[in-house]
Image (cartoon, rainbow, N blue to C red):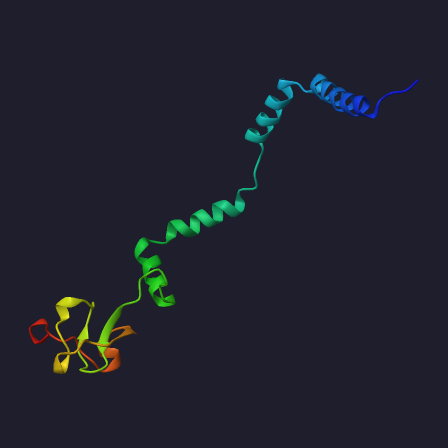
Length: 126
């Protein structure tokens, strides 16, 4: 007696699905969920962390971040013209022309101008 291979390979998975469906009960799933919701957690560590965080104020946290060097703040930048040493916060057409009527050659610098021995140029001098 011959059995085609395709028939055997298609019947076996169907039988295994029927077997799994037979023993799968929705009540088992409910019991599993109930066990998860009523499980006792070791919340000693969580309570300790909550107590530590409750003792800190927002001001204390901000001061600590400033001490460590807050990396969330944008670094301050300014621009210096390489030709005429004009210092501005932003570049654009409102900054006028450079000495001799040519365009400015802006170099971007980080920090404050005072850190580099410079100061912002007043807008009436642009």
